[in-house]
Every structure is written in C-alpha cells, then in structure tokens.
Image (cartoon, rainbow, N blue to C red; front, side, top):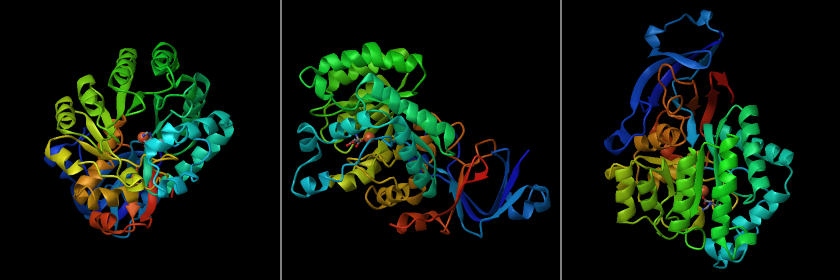
Length: 412
Ligand code: NIG
Ligand code: FE
C-alpha cells in the first residue's frame, strides 16, 4: 500500500457531497484550519486536525508540507475542445477589423478551418499536442477534464479524435472524459442539405460511437446558422435512445431554443448561455440542468457574460469551464476563469470553488469520485500559493497552483 500525508494545511476548503450544488448550497464550503489529509492507495483515508494525526509521520511513504497554505480539490474543467489540428491566430486581424464569430464561420472559416486541419492531422501528432495541453492544464491545478470531438464531421476523423481522447486519458495523469460532438457544425459537403448530415449522425455515427463505447456524452451546437431547434432535438433524441448522456451548446450567440430544449429533453448540462432568456432559464431550473458557463469565451469574443448570478438565485447549479478551443477561447487557464466568474459573474469565492469542482464533476459523470475532499474520494488536490480562496479570485494572470496531487501522486 502507498501512503501520503499532506500536513500543515492552513485552510482546507471544499464543497461536500457528491451531487450538483444549487441555490444557497452553491456557496457552502467546508473550511478546516490546521488540517491534514492522509491518502492510502490514491484515495482519501482521513481528514483531521493537525493535532490529531491518525498516523505518525515515520509510518507513511511520503509527507508533503503545505506550509500553512490553502488546499482545495483538484479543479475540474467540464468543457473543452482540446483535440484539434492547427491554430486560428490568423482570425485575430479579421476580428479586430470587425468580423464576428458567425461571420467567419459563415464564410467557411472558423470551426470549418479547424476541421480541414484536423482531418489532415496524423493521430500521433494529435496525441502529442493534446498531451502537451494536458500538462499545461495540470500545471494550473486541473486534474479532470472533459474533451469533445467535433472537428472531424466525418466518420473517420470523429473516430480519430475519440481515439486521441482515449489514448491521452490512458497515458496521462489527468482523467479525460469523452464527449461525441459530431454535431458541432455543418460540414462543407452538406452545406446545402444539413438534414442529410443529421441523418448520417443519427443513423451511422451515433450508433457506431455507442457500439464501440467511444464517448459518454453527446453534444450539439444549437445556434443560428448551425443546427436549429428541430435538428438538435432529433439528434439528441436519437443519442438519448442509444444511452448517451446529453449536453447542448445553447444560446451562445442567439437564443433559438437550445436552453429550453436542454430542460425539455433532460440534458445533464447546457453550455455557454450568454443570450439565455426567461423561458430558457425556467426550463433549465425545472429540468435540473447544470449551467456550464464559459466566461473566458465571453471575454475573448468581447460579448456579454451569462447571467450566472441569476441562475444561482433561480436554483440552477452553475459550473464554469475553460471551453479551451482554437477559435472562441484559446486559453486553458481555469484560474483565469475563476477570476472572471468572481469579477464578471459576481460569484462569491465559495460559489466559484463549487463551480470548478463538484458541479462540473457531476456534469461530466465523475461526482462520485472527484470534486470534493472527503474520505473515500480520489485524492485529487491542489496546494495553492495562497492563504485563502479570496486570493485566488483576486490575483489574475499568475499561476498560483504550487503543488498538484492526482490519485495520491504528486504530479507538480
Ligand atoms: O464552444 N461554439 C461552438 N464551439 C466552440 C468553439 C469552437 C471553435 O470556434 O473552434 C465553443 O465556443
Ligand atoms: Fe464549446
């Protein structure tokens, strides 16, 4: 058996319970001063006061001194598009000169540009590139991530992307949860007949991905000029029938019914929600859908921020994620997302911690093992160069993750 003792924790701060936290509970964290955590075989065996250590230091394999700093659960990034060919820095001058995200996509660029590069890319090169991104994320304190396909939009490339996700998940310390997002854009070959592409997704791609167990979730981009309400519904109904859990990119730019559909169809989460209206909010609250809010995307697109404060007041569980992708958010820094969640969404530090730990963990089907520091849970932890959560919400642009522990192993 391997054992690790993390001692001299100034403040151990964590949500508790393995379920999505909504309303007042979003802001309830356990805070323990002068604490210690004992880990056995990658699992938390005890959380105690420093004065009541359950073992003597000489009896454990490794002792890590937190030096009276803050310790939280490892961060969970619940929404990324981290597997992609090429980059899109050439869009910067277009954006500065006034082109919007949808202008670029409608002109055959944007996601479609990344699709061309991802189709051309060798699987080995994508594995290497994605592994580097995971290293960088882990350095920021992220220990579990979700990753979507959706830059293939054909059977072979979508499978290649899901295979990359599977390979990096096996090889890397960070856990990666796969989502199939074949409905990320209308491929150029189908631009005059998007319904035929939805049929291909429903009749061939979703069944293949399910049969080979390549993804746990199915996601769709419900948006003006992409998939409309009816097409999204057809795709998600088929995915549900096959046994996928559901996600929807909803109301990112135009509210065309995506968040309403999320509530109606029982999606686990709806993503973006910048333009959500009253009807969408009510549908999500009623359907128990988690709001996966992506403030770094609002920042990068220069658009409004989702009404996350209002969502908490309405009893919708709020998670915040990076949305790391080559177009609308080329940053994977979840600490910056935490700064924005506080300063732009007006979330309190406790609410922010819930939004980057247990709520995204539940939204990607991992709430039973990660997202909180509790006995029996996986020992995923961060020791911060900070005395408290307020400091993490306040300092921005720096990396305050000092030590990162994944399944009881020190990985940074
Ligand atoms: O979540 N909005 C759709 N999908 C991604 C962006 C993908 C891209 O631009 O490459 C998002 O923002
Ligand atoms: Fe996204």
